[in-house]
Image (cartoon, rainbow, N blue to C red):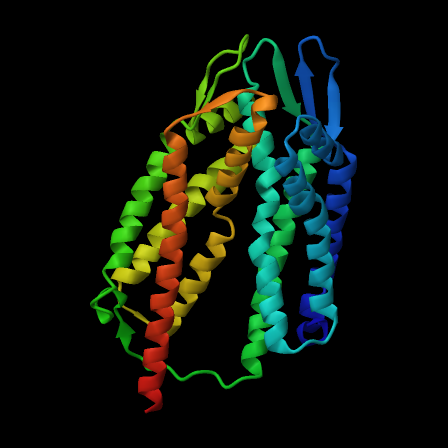
Amino acid sequence: MAKWSGKKGLFIPLLLLVSLTLNIFALILPFLQINEALHSTVIYSLPHSVKLMWEHKLYAVSLLILGFSIIFPFVKLISLNLAWFVPWDAKRRTTFIHLIELLGKWSFMDIFVVILLLALTSNQAFIHSKIHIGVYFFIGAISMSMVLSQLIYSIAQKMEREQTSPPVHDAKRHWLLIENIYLGWTVPVLTFVAIAALLEALHAPFLKISQFLLASHSYSISDTATVLHDNGQLVLYLVMAGTLAVIPITRLILLMWTWIIPMKIKTHEWMNSFTEGLSRWSMLDVFGLALFLVTTEGKDLVKTEIQPGLYVVLVAIGLCYFLGFLAFALHKAMVRSEESTVAS
């Protein structure tokens, strides 16, 4: 890929090196501080936060953070370097990079765990937490590696297309809403339901503190974002607002747009690729996993009660996944049908 890209691709290895540097600093620099009554103040780095979770018997949380936030980012950078510099079969390389790209967003799980801890310990007299600069290095490192993996995946797709005969498409505009009369209507309907579920998930309380000596606050996604904003954590606020609200809603609106507006096949494919790219930054599922782990295993740190909003979040996640699978399957069926018609 380095040879194919030539001078235009020289910035790729440079940015991979920058991402590696940010990851190293994220491991070294202070990450999280916990202040508990009758306990000394402790400042943790990212590896120490894994130790913190383990000491509080949050075993699944600590192992997932170790895997996705410490080990995987370096494995991903090594893999992207190999894909960039080592000659591979074009199709296998594209598949490999696509798999790496799909897993990239799960490294943000640690950030959402930190966000939930910040919210749960906010405005409490006996426990308090705050973040340190290592969090910002970590967000920068993971975000940059995600952008690079998407860019390298796009380049790999172009190289693969050069080695295969490009499909011939007609100039006809295709209307997905009516072309598959039995299932085409389901995507706009499910998209509307998914948007409604997502908007409800943003405001429905999912957690309530139920620990002696702690104020019994209830939290929703919007409440948590408000806590971050009020405490001056603007970077975390933007991460939460962007990945849990703005990008998911934008993705659903664009998906509905492609379904109800007639478009040429090439336009459909571009829109499909774009919405698929947005799905990498739509992190309601990552937040849902972090929320599940904190509610089930985090009771040794802060005792909480599950509120009905948790199930609304799970429904929104399920709808988004099912909708994405259905839209992808129907779109592929349309493309195959059009290609067979042109070929005949």
